[in-house]
Image 1: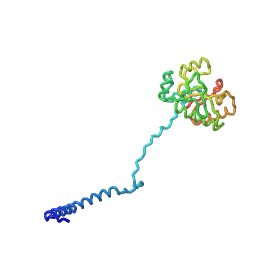
Image 2: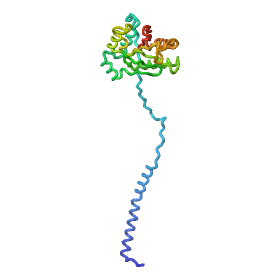
Image 3: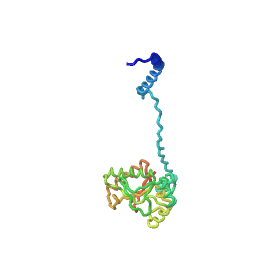
Length: 241
């Protein structure tokens, strides 16, 4: 092995010594950095104590309670006046014409009814199968109650629903029993239920008629509806309050 000159050995010794000093000088800082990094990576946060957290209250928007105005006796000269009073207090007033009807449908002030559980609607010629949303809720309650008292396949039949004034006049020309002038059918809260048609067919059934009248009476006593038995048209004229 060839020996290195003394000068070269001295230079190597100086470099090694400087490196050692540098290592000693920087090692504490390096250790600190490694320790901090390791601590960050391995630190597990303590589980939150949910019982000690302050829970903020949740705001829930509740529907306004439905207020049914009492019927003023001084305004009632005949039973039908109660139906008109109920119609006038439904929110948007009487339907003026076909254009007004279409606007109410577009704004969902009136909703479609064609059939549902316990009821179905005939093909209508002088009215439209639309009523107010709340009236539909009550109609569906009537239909469900009818099925409970009869059977799950039974349905009552609606023969007339919402009319424009023009339709009311047209109906008056062919049906003397139709109201002349203002009708509760023009407020979107009235409909006629046949008591000789069930499951969409003309079928006299005394038992079902009695059960239907019993349901209507209970709903009227509860303040949900008003009804009149129209003998000429063989139907119950129902108005939702």
